[in-house]
Amino acid sequence: MLDPILLRVAKSAIMRQFDDSYKFDEKSLLEAYPMLLVEGAAFVTLKHKQSLRGCIGSIIAHRSLYNDIVHNAVAAAFEDPRFYPLSESELSHVEVEVSVLSKAEILEYEDFSDLLQKVRPDVDGLIINYNGRQGTFLPQVWEQLKTPREFLEHLSMKAGLNPSVYEKHPMIYRYGVDAIEEKFDEIASL
Image (cartoon, rainbow, N blue to C red):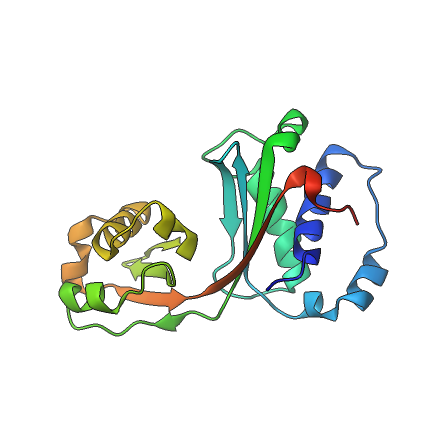
């Protein structure tokens, strides 16, 4: 179970974009929660009235978990190219989810049939990488795409690849997530 502090960090990062005077003691926060200083990869997902409103993240840890959540919360709220920037009036209807990713591992497979058997629905997040194109789906996407075939076909399309790409044996990685979600208004401020 993830600590609610992760949601508080995401909320604070978003609030600072609306109000320059929104401040908190970052040094004390990081002293109280040293796990935020460890390198970590996280996705921040925003939903507005149950519909996706923004989702940006890192699939490889390359900065502190704190900095990754701050960066990705701001990016999900204001820089996701699929959506207009989040407005302050939407906040009361927004849910925030922070997903912390495990290290991705190569998923070895013989052919597409074998891959279909090895993928674990509702557990695996997957990354496809082929010819300079890459895409990922968090495990939460299994809520919409129920079968391994459907999941993999949509994953290839997200990466800008034809679903027939699996005949060419692209690199597939799998990872897990720990996730925590809360309504924006119910997340305590820092």
